[in-house]
Length: 494
Image 1 (tube, rainbow, N blue to C red):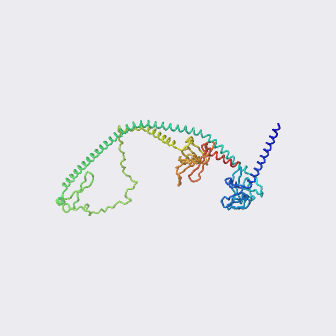
Image 2: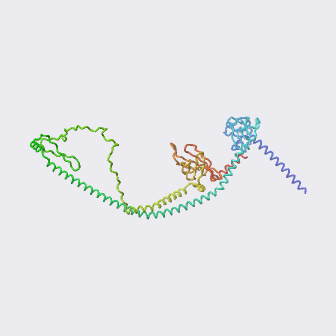
Image 3: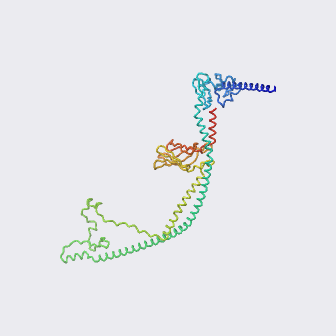
């Protein structure tokens, strides 16, 4: 029985001793903290030695009790981190609950509270209230909200990944379907094409034969016309010769005049008119006769018509013969058959082009960078809008960006590539948009920010024809960013 009280007494004594040791340790820590005021956390090990301190620049080693003694012993001022003794020294504001910062030593104990925790005014010149908790409250709320958003976004990402993989499988399936459809249509077109080639060959042969016959007909017609003209010319020459033989000579005319007592008159050159209406001179056989009209000695003294006597543009003109286009040649059986065949082929060719275009897009989409887990593929071709003044801005993910104004729209770029940050897709680039008058082609940069859902946050034009958007999505959230925010919160909360 008496043993129990002795044990209790012994344990009580041990407890009192432990309490004393703890108190002494706290006092020592308090003294050490007071002596090492203003030291940056990364430099704390330099001041941890019990007896001596070596300047950071290695210029000298001094007794530890000379640190923060209001006298500058080191050239770099490292022995006075908590006083204003060294002009080149710096003071560390711990500012627990808010952001730590460095001050020039000249601002220590100057009567102004520069640190929110008041640690820079420890001399008592002024009493500083610790404002760090109040000043850090807003930032702590922002960080806590950021942690929450990133963690929620990371949790949602698995759903996006599942949707993206389902969409990817659908694209693969559709690509294969399109390949089969293109093959079927191509086979039908190949059958039609054989018929078209045969008809084209026949039409070409018929055209060649028709042109040959037309050429022969033209040559025969020209030959016939030439022969007729030659014949008319020969007949005309014979008529002229016969008329020339029938005209009396000058001597005959003179003797005839003497016989009847007529006065002598100069002979006139006889003329004849051919069947084309052209006046032809008949050769005069009279001796010594010279026709003044044909010798160049005759001068026509009749007045020439003046400009006023010339017909004006408004005067009547005989109507020109109306142009009649050549009659259209009737189409051959082969040409009509070809037209019908091409009408049947046209919808098949259009169907093939449509399938090929869709297939090319499917192949291209499968090559896009949707992130390492393909999560961004869940947003493919999803469109979002934001109204800014009179403009409506639209972004269709991985397709295009547009600016709309009433019924008109401007292309701000088509999908190009990503900019990555810390291994994450962070900024989308849309390039080669509509041309800017006397400037570059329009382009758009879309920055991803973490949020609860997809939302187009803002649009701006920082420089001419260069646009920037902020787009909120859970896919911009990451565990890495959540950890960074958590560390920042920890740093300002202790």
